[in-house]
Image 1 (tube, rainbow, N blue to C red):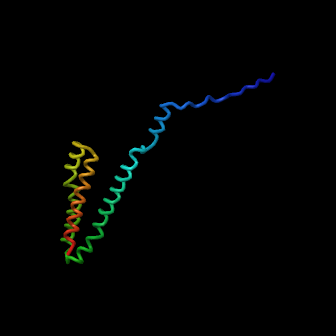
Image 2 (cartoon, rainbow, N blue to C red):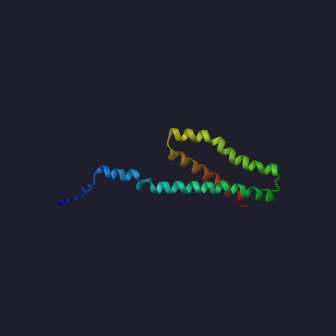
Image 3 (tube, rainbow, N blue to C red):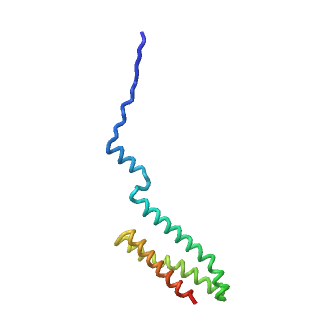
Length: 122
């Protein structure tokens, strides 16, 4: 007596639930990919500017004939701005949105960069 049994798998049906679970498994949805790339690029550029201060302080000492004590104020002013602006930035983000906080920060950064360009020109 021979028993011949065949087991067939049920076909997988696509439902809204399986499509939603695929979207939930993605880290970044298609609509947010460009903003994610832009904000990541901004953080990379802020990091580069942050790192440049360490390289520029010795150049400032040499060109401007500054002492070590005087040049330490460059680093103090740069990192002191993080301390001074932390609470106002947190308030701005809490009251409005993260997007407005980033745009405000970029605007202040751009204004500062334009002031530097004006002061460097002879």
